[in-house]
Length: 329
Image (cartoon, rainbow, N blue to C red):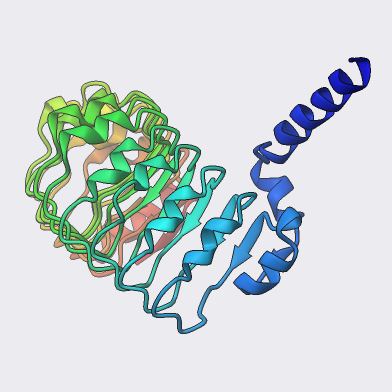
């Protein structure tokens, strides 16, 4: 009986050890296999598999036999459809599928319940893949350079998400449940079709990096900045802005602001209240003057003013009043 109990204990612990999830740094120390066959030949050590840029048009169903797999890179291939067997890799934490021809994900994709990072950039999704919203442990999601128009309310299920990249899609609005992404730190909405800075963003209390460049934004509602005190970097370049809201001072931690390629002729005096600002890009606007209190931006390290209509006398005054600032005219 004692021997049987000992064997049972060892077997149970062996199973636990086999199913242990490794952190990203430990995974990087593991051998990276570059073919399914080599991984199958060493299945007990196959934690990482990279089939990147191997001109694959499909993935072998044998992938399901790699039960230890936690990192899988299939990017830069020609895969149009994933086999359902991929959904059996329940220890998978990092999955890279960028630069393929995917337009949908297999049924059961939500079974990849330990997935932390999912990369689907440069594919052919016309709809936000609903299966992704079942991945409640997801921390980083990359869906840029697709053709997605709408984001479902169920995205609010991803409340552990820290990084969300939706650049270069066709998004016009954010859903009501977007504010449930209360751990979101970095959000990239560049290259979409937003006409105003979404008010709902002010409810995301941990946002630090926000990129809304290359949209159609002509308006920044004051409410969108009401609770934006956590923002460190804001990119609104290449939009249609001609004015800024009076409550700009709500951005009391902002370090980098990009307003290049907009329609500004003048800037409001409130911009001088951004005293934490270290980098400001105003290039390619038709600015003819700056507010007199602009020189209060004493922490400014880099100022970009190329392509503006500022007269030489203003340029000279800036250089004199901001001697520690690198200015590009």
